Length: 190
Image (tube, rainbow, N blue to C red; front, side, top):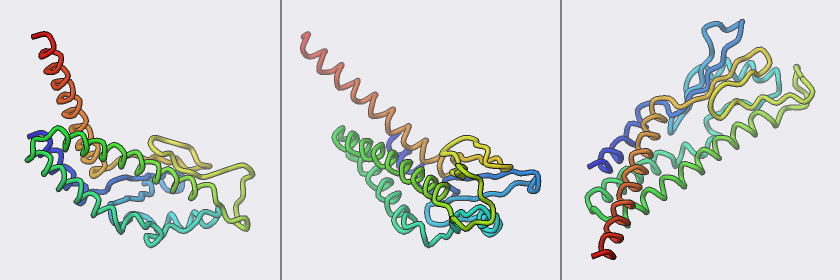
């Protein structure tokens, strides 16, 4: 039952932003927000692009995110295979599904970090404002000061649903693995 719930939880990642980068500065007391969905970007993209132009950062363009083309399909695959896993009741399916989730999650976090690194370090050498040795990589998660901007980066609704699904899958997998070990251990002593 828990695996079926986890599989269905992944469907909420379509509805809500997956991640958010929030910028604050004295000239923007209300803040600027970049919402990252599974398939698109939203928020104050034009204003952020205008500011980033001065420091030589690349334009944030949805077309540059190849991930948007396949992420919705991967999440659908995760949800469907999770339901198959739940219906099968098979430990092998459970272990395989959870291993896939963990590997995919690690690769997704690395891909996001790589995007942030490239975006914050590969600057236009002809930018109007240049600070020697300065890079503008937002934090992967948490807070970072970037010149006069405070940058916050953290999961949004869709990201929290995704994390909940992965946590449920891992907890159920660990409990099932422990139960199997106890069963094997119990048989050896009888």
